[in-house]
Length: 511
Image (tube, rainbow, N blue to C red; front, side, top):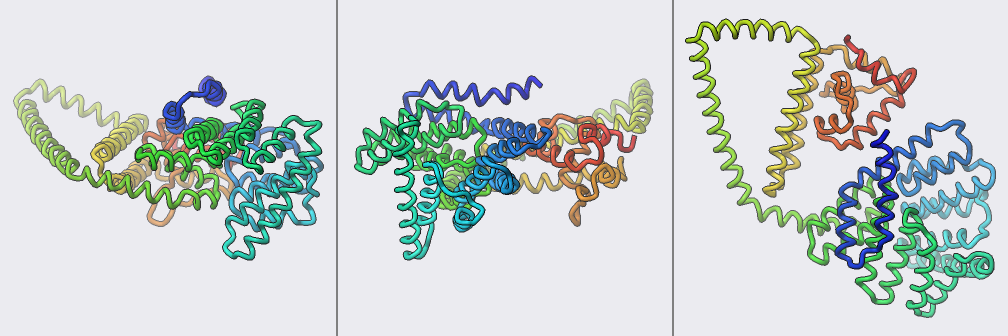
């Protein structure tokens, strides 16, 4: 409980630090790099928040909308599914669901689907400046993505029509809403090229939003674009990083600024930082399932990856020398071990008393081997040693710059999983059948041809052996703790009976 509370408080603490506004781009990048390294904590916090909401009852329309909005910047397909559930909801949830679905489809690059939904009979009439802004941005992005000039022109005309409607709506709203007044003045200043005034209005909008809100990241991105139009590159980069930091701390995967920060690092010659940030951006794009993000990042990611590989190739000679020395050292150690083993055997043969002790130890070992508890301990120890061995060799290869370290890791892990499956199933021969018997028919798991167990089965096999910590399971199976937690939640959701007692029932298999 304490760990979960700390996890949920981290984004709030991070936002407090952000409000101090570091004065230089270097310090902001340092903060961003640190946050990216622990991004799994923030992602886990958002996933936990969503899971908690999904577990609440009754499932009201307000609760469904809250879940959809939590998913919106996190996982597009899940958010869209919740929005679609609310298409027949009462107002205001019907309107919010349809406009949310249009925004989501547009941001994910599904422009045709978004426009069709916006123009459908069930879509409510556009009324507020926010509605018109949504339509303006959708058609503007669709026009930029269109390949035919005629289609580009038509979409651009429609976009301009909605822009004018938005400005008219803002003009009527500005008497009653301060934010509308500032936004209206910001756009007017931008139209006439007065970016100094536009930046002032944008700063006032930012002061009205807490850095703990997603809207702050969106406004910070827009602020950065105003600095770019005004020709202030350094300031533009600072605000891009501020936007990216808020996205990380809120566990947001729909990142508009992350890949741009990676590009700045690449152009500045910091390949290592660019590689780290680009991998983070690509991972988020894959999890969010947004084609537009892949289009934005693919070419840049290819260049960064190529340069990173070139640096690795430059270290191949040093790696070969290191591996040669390592091999020689291992050979020497093996000779020493064999010699020591031979000497030990000679000493045992000459010492009657020691032989008697060994006999008693051998008898004790035979009795211990008959105990399932000891067998389980042997398996756990074997797993720790084996996985630690793989990590050590892979880490050495990575430090030396070995390009094929990932392939080496994959081969060794395949061997490791096969060895684990054979060893475990030799003790619990009916584990696969007993495990599936605890699941609903539609949730049961079948290993692929040539495999004896799946990832989920290995996770719960370790739980049966008494290893219940996701972090420890992740360490043994070489996965991330977040991945292990997701697998556990997914399997328990398909459990027969009470999902909260599922793991205890698994631990009783074969006992």
